Length: 125
Image (cartoon, rainbow, N blue to C red; front, side, top):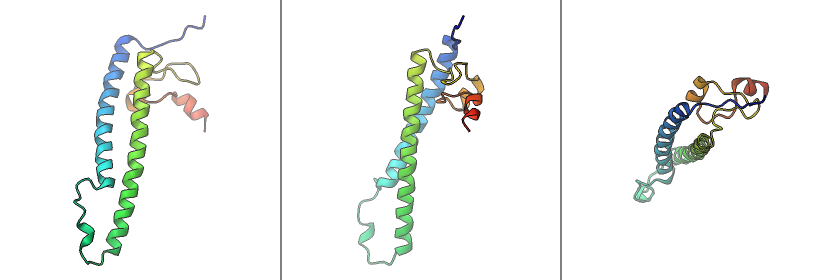
């Protein structure tokens, strides 16, 4: 017999709660990153003063680029978490996509969007 093992409905509900909390926090963080690189709080007059700020300007550009990169990474994280919710609805959540075995609960609690068990991840290296 090749019965697929899966988590119980109670376990899946617990994981769903964890993931929904992570999504809420990630969306909040994303909003902060986006505001930081868009200068949403800036009224546009900061650069009109005749000051020599070349170092500050370079630093501001680097900071905006870094925040944009963080925002992109956060968007991917949110997408992966939402895909995990789809797997919960399909009752395939927590099943390693390479081995077909259950991923340990501890790993799923730490990395709820994972699709690989530790063994499968280590075998990829």
